[in-house]
Length: 380
Image 1: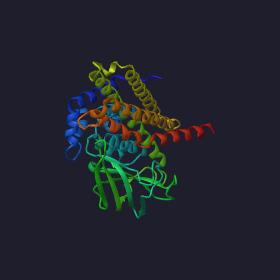
Image 2: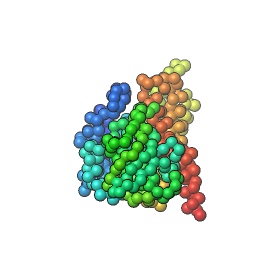
Image 3: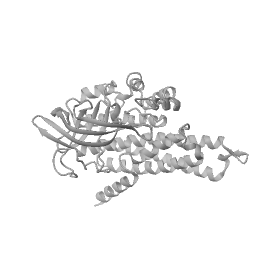
Image 4: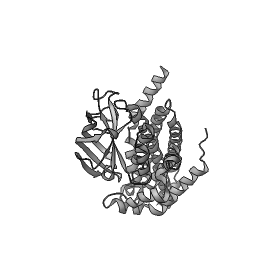
């Protein structure tokens, strides 16, 4: 299978990498995270106007660059290398995915706002009791005339503190864990009845616990089919998993490179510790894990357009990414010693991000079980 990139895709990678190298250094990131609001609107504006990457996966008819999942993968991998906290995943990948796949009447206008950097989205789907089950929802949306009334609570909504809109999953019919009776809504964060508890996450992002109390939205807020939105949610989440795996590849490559550089500088018994054979073997094992993660991510990204193989490929990639994040991250910290977990060294920040990615959209064990179910189901 051909994994080579087109000239346009290579140019996109070089453009993003060059901009982040000049404007998103580790020290610049630390300074930004140390003050409110915990992200840079100027960087986001540059993504939209100077680089145009917020339109990377959208068609030229919508004002985008005419790309798709591969372009998202390229951007996310470079963002992983720089530990970018700006909400590309929630806004471009997830919200953009819902709008592209749902046939929403306002999709063109909202995608235009995303590309321009005006609309920022956060995905409010997780609930405390749900674990990783996308269908386990207590949040409800009751139809009232020509509108819907939302009640419930969403946990760990990444990017919500600075979002203008939320993508909200809610139950419009059936039981709490039924596959049917699920719908998706666009809700403005300024809507009456929404309250949030904002907090920083361990990896430098910002998140919120979002409560909906009699939040009224119009019928135009509905994305996709009423009561039958689970397949749409699963499709977009698989796209988000592939994009998160791409980000992880960037994080893992920096963990490996940083460790390799450190072992060349750190001396013990009069020689660099990189000369010790046992550490050489360990770093080779880390390199293999990184390369396997990259290959699985490429495969999952390519298969996103095929609904028959998409889910299984996404689950397999997430399993490999989870294993790689743990192995590479823990070995990087071990070879750095106590210095590896200090706030002043970048390696600890990459380790924290890798740890969070391991459980994003489902843990390694969850996706391993998911892959097993899909394999047995297909065999049957």
